[in-house]
Length: 134
Image (cartoon, rainbow, N blue to C red; front, side):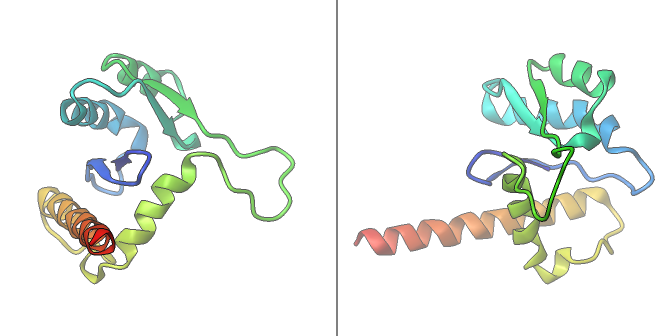
């Protein structure tokens, strides 16, 4: 899942659980650049996307990966910079009962449900802003 700095969905790639996350960087980067008109230059990723291959896959689409790393000497809860934006998106998805379990047969169905859920969230925010401005 790729979101912008406001937490709005840009792209989603659904794969079986036995496929590594790192292998999906190229497909996700391609979708992000297609949606944004090739305007994304930097993507913040977690430590699961470290390595030369994910960086090369993203660079092929004009994106530089910046890995958000956990501090070595951690005591208690540590908020990772930029990582919370994606985690907030996961929390929003947890509110949708249909997305709580991956019972769909086709990956496109699950991806479509994610897009629908984010559209509902954006519509709710839009309506709230419009009602506050009147």
